[in-house]
Length: 153
Image 1 (spheres, rainbow, N blue to C red):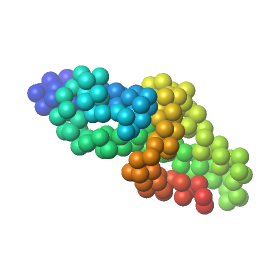
Image 2: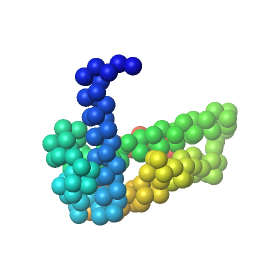
Image 3: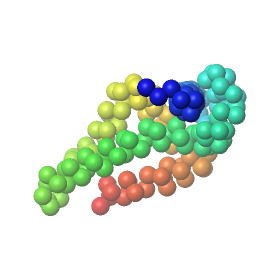
Image 4: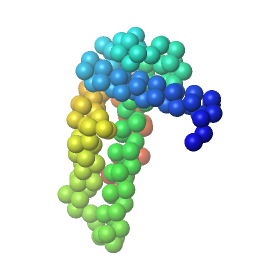
């Protein structure tokens, strides 16, 4: 096992980053983006403000990171499932049920997986779509437009 100083620093940084993400996810879910402050996140996570700025930049970037760490894998699963269904259909059109299943099965799996945020993460997504901060809607629509387009074709 390599215990070099660089590896130890990387490991600590990774733990700190995950601690910030976990704490921010819980607080954003509970209070929303606007009502959650960076100081509250750093206090609850037991880290300093410099750690948030180092890993994420600012509050908006932190919120985006909270969303992408769960949404990216879920959306990759959605597209993979859709690809599989299309391959199995051998050129025939997919049924509406199959398309809807490809969209919702990964979300339902995520809801059952507490290690991946579970139901609370899905609540955060609902809160994010209802949040008045325009950057959130802009981020979600631009970040996930290719995945959504795949389901429209």
